[in-house]
Length: 374
Ligand SMILES: *Cc1c(COP(=O)(O)O)cnc(C)c1O
Image (cartoon, rainbow, N blue to C red; front, side, top):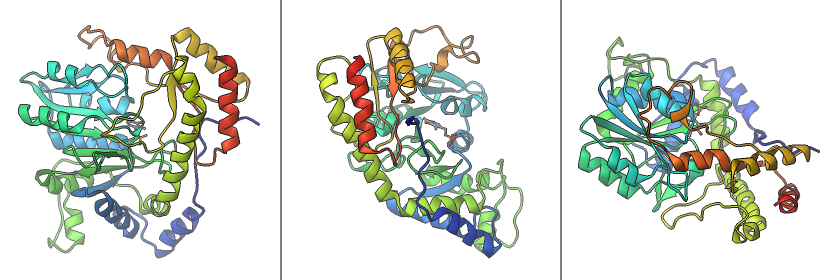
């Protein structure tokens, strides 16, 4: 039997809760379940304001609107990430300045970031790769010194922490994804966490098509109208109902995912000590959240060979993140700097099958197959 790379996990309560939402007859955005989700996130993680979106991409686009970046402004972004992290800011006309990642962890290199800050820099976007925190104290100090805004792309990082602070709650903005490949899912979905009071009111207008409709429904204003720029970033309440059933089971989901990560770690540690594969230890200031299990090998040729051998054995491992600074869209806009660590991670990374229902014996089988070929 083939082992897929990903298989969405269902708690079994989703359909019931979506039906419950449908039977109430109120299925558009900002309904009962949306509010339940918002409360969950605000209470559990201390976000000043949580706003569900239709994707992490949408949440990043909202963050970009809120930072008010535009032509002439520079935004520092890691090159080793998903397209949306950069695209959201490119859409606003800002100049994307790609930074390399660290040699040991594919998180943005803060030494590089310090060198890349210019008087035109407005925003730094970071990704907590595989749910492992960027050194946020140092990042926030750089931001404060240079009067910059920080966006945490926390698409991998739900329920993960930096020195006991939830990821997504430390920067001015945090963005999350509930795409079916992430820890907590609703098909397509996301969340914007706004952590600075200066932006909470405006975030709600932008979310609701540039109107103050949310305030109107709370009875704060007598009528609602066009008060700002915006778009339709809010998901249907049925999506929120689906998501809420997952949030209610979050602890179980996280426990299972972390157990899978630990099993992989246990089985593959010997290969790591022998230097045949590499993956970082989790830094003292960070936690793991069972987002994915990855490792790197010596070079690209070896990586590609392992991937095709695994496929032949019915194990669907993948690689990801082609460097964005070398992408078709961006390569002519890049300033020519080499980003060697981004290149190395992109060339040598392997991500193993990872999903809640992955059985221990399947993890063991994958590890045995790897041991046989390394
Ligand atoms: C998945 C992902 C996104 C995009 O999330 P969507 O919800 O699919 O828009 C953005 N950034 C990172 C780092 C991701 O892994």
